[in-house]
Image (cartoon, rainbow, N blue to C red):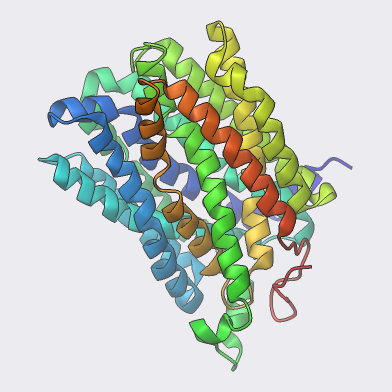
Length: 414
């Protein structure tokens, strides 16, 4: 049977739920990555250097755990659906406000606020989707959901390529307010999670600390695991366009620059779907380890390809592996989460990992400066080291593939 067969077995309502969760993460990533395409332009307008603008990426990532905890607890208490809609509206509003920044300080504050809103979306969307589908569909849906991130990256690259020369960097952030329209789709087609409704009807409601009793070691492990995951993805993506401009000398709006980013995101889409589906047969941990280790031999082609074609192939292959490992994350974290904490713990662990990894872009920038501006060296060393760390953490951790959600769910590892 095809590993994608479970998708065809989903009901119409389940498909709407998966699509809404996918679009939420896609549009969230779209809004985040717009800044990565205009770092140089923003630095010039505010008479600053790129390192100060890159701080905006750090602040966004650092703020996301706050949003994950805040919106996650609200989602566990009031439901996935209404809090997801609130969250989408807020990150769209802060994205729009960024377009009207009058100083770099104002822009950085708005990116921090955007990070709080962005921090809530992934955990709520993933729990809503995972709680709404059959267990056998989790692997492939997990890969599909996580593929929303590179799709958002691709959309950001496309909008930047088509529009930046006409509307400038501020205009891009105005376009970034469009995700607010997703709320209309969610409100019309997506029902509340039945698993959450069961929990709400239960007379035994648990607070945060009670629900987490006996699971604190798991929570710490998941945060460290997600630190490695975020160092892996952000280390391969956030400064890639800067690498194109500064190392490859490709103008920001050029077709060649867009083509490389398009190949990078096509690889991410393929990797997320393939490895996510593979995890149903191979297991969550072994799939993560395989994808992480396969990224290492691709690094020379990715950063040092001798032609545009070679660089494009390298960009494609490295993201097949990076997002291939990531394709397992939504189901892996939701399966490990205790009952009553599925709206909070996966997202909080994910975004706390983001906080711990928030220095990634700055660290790569520092390493490159130490090497005389060699960003290719910095990104290569970073990804190789993180791939090994991620493989090790996945190897020593727990797994709960196929655990039942709801009152009978254990939420514990093997």
